[in-house]
Image (tube, rainbow over the protein chains, first blue to last red):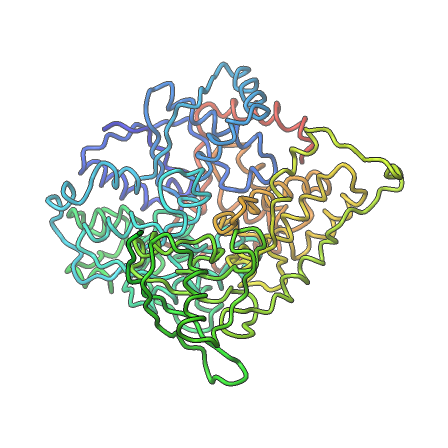
Length: 295
Length: 322
């Protein structure tokens, strides 16, 4: 399988461990990741608020490169997945299509709307069902209770994303089960992490993140896992502030989705960048018989 | 004869005057899979416990009275069939709507919902410069009507208001329904208060939206409030520029990408929050940078960055945006 790899900004910067884990897992599963050094940021749900057509054009440019190479595009971020899917959807509107086509034309580019955008969770669900994945598991995550945290833009609007149930998804839990972990069901798993207003109304954002962590903990989760590096920022990088906002300590390890896959497939914590996390992951790693080496 | 199945239903029961705390009461009824949850609740009321309180009227997804939380999702009880819920959850749990105080059982006080709606002045404000013709219709073009053809479908059921995590965390946020309605008046060519509406809604209003799309997901009429809120944000920036923390952040993010094509995380904080905000965030930034040193570096410049800048040139002017 060959895919145009769209890491997004955070996985190339402060969330580098997500990129490390994705590459490790792809290599292990025989997925060839084709890099495109010309991909730009997806707009992250902010650029379109300032100028929708510009944002659609930026992503049409990104999508055009994958289309020209004849590849589906792989994202590892719920928000990238949402924004690139939004571009495909908006390009169905003739008024937007006309302006974007004209602008791309001036760059000598064209996009015909053919690039399929797929998140890593979707690729794993579709191409590595449990019967194919289970035999590859060398370190089953047995005994680890994990709260999946999907990230809004991977799920909603469901008709735009076109693959999961917007409020009753199960693909992440199915994957966790295949890896040997015990998924924990809680309301927060499909809720917002607060990230979109982290720099706008920080206190409210911290409180929202804190509530989701509390909810997962109350349902017995030893750790949470997310397919979105922006959720990871809210839940891991800012967990100290989330704890202040909800008024008590929180100590919840937060994994990126491919990190848990990597652990089950035999990667070392170091190879997956786990020492880069702000909340120590050792309490969860001990349950599956390994610990992180300090980075 | 359609086959019946046993349907386990757990219903939230609470009478604030009499009960010390809310509780769930379990019922099991035989019914066909296509039975609406509303019908199931009415059967409980008529056959098992006549004290169960709920609001409903039309039973046809028109009146918007029977919004409640069914298996954690805010929606109309008359529009939700028991069969698919059993497939997903094995049972049905019914709660009252969120973000509104419970009066009894599944009936909530919708006062806050309607007060938030009142705040947006939900009627046309005549434009003195373009008085409405008296005794004659005031026609709009199909293109003008198209701009808000989704929002008049709203039946004010409150499902979006119940689903909204921004409302839950910040009671000053007006909620999705009021903002979707606001959009409808802002783009109505007959309205004379467009600018005032956009200026008035911003402080504490518009920019608290999280864009989680739970409102769009819960809406029984596909009004898509989250998308209308996004549209309002773009209109507000066009009208007023980047004056609020939220609009500053959106515009700063856009400008941030212009130079390198990828996000410069640290620079974004300065652009949104200014130097003072940067200093306020400094301890957290330094704490993070110890483990994530990339935060202190500029991102690489993408290949073909000049193409990105050209797109800005081509698509910024005609928007009239910042």
